[in-house]
Length: 414
Image (cartoon, rainbow, N blue to C red; front, side, top):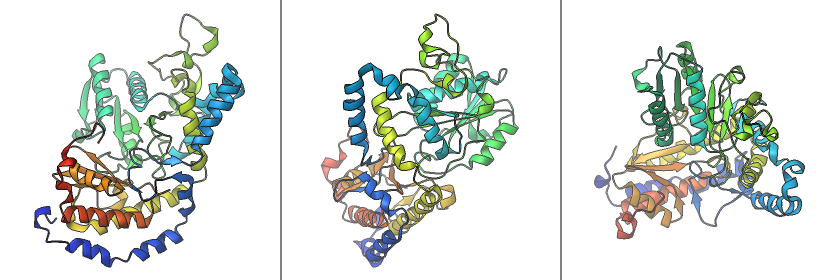
């Protein structure tokens, strides 16, 4: 790769200009997913490439939330738990998410956060493998995955082992992310699941950076977790989901035995009896207002052809990588089959570079220590957006616009 300091004045920007912008507009006009862009609210002139961190606002979400607040809560008060179906939302929304991850009805529950779902899944898995005292994860996994495993392992007296060691014969459970949050490197879910299970361990997948970006199939896995605020567009802080393979639902124990997972929540018994099926993995009172926003987003997702989603994701990624060329070091896999739906590059001053980009209407994000990430959410990112983003990035680099002192100040959220 060509180093940043060795780039002559503006050659890459001129090269990018030779790739006709009209070609990208023509691709957008032919895109079979093009009409979905109108389903989302996007600021005028903004190129939004952060759907891998926070998805864009679905256009009819405000109305759905208004209905829940004013008509259901305001009009029905506490009666909304029955008449508006609030009580069943963790299960009904779980059934709506299930097709997006290759699961079936009664296999997914929605609620709480990804961190809590990880704790539930790992704790349940290790109890199903008594006698094995090792949990495996990836040193490059998202921090909350690592932290939750570390805390659980310390409380149980377990060992935490990195997946790179490649040994599973004495392992209770393995937790991996299908798509690496920094580099977008993608695991072969079927191959790794089979390998882990053949060794007698249980497989748990984190789908946060894959669900909503591609067709996902964890039906052979033992557990899976995922968030809904990234590619699924459920809104900031929207609830997570937990998949439990039907083979484990009768025997797996939810260590967070909250009242919602009780067999008869309104019997108000002094002792805990788990509900049957997936509801035993529910924990607490449904977050009705957050569920309303997620429900609106799922109205869109139920109409999305997932095979077209992945095809466009790959095409957008290939275009972006080609346009950026050697201006930055690519840290994502060059092979699209091994890459998720974001593209990551390395720059020693990545943070001010990203700040300068955002100031010019191109929204990506930064991950320490030096990673620039660009999320390519296929439902609303256009080919022309990728073209414009690449041109702006090259301009920021070649004119060194990122050196402005104001970009060095770190914001709370990067």
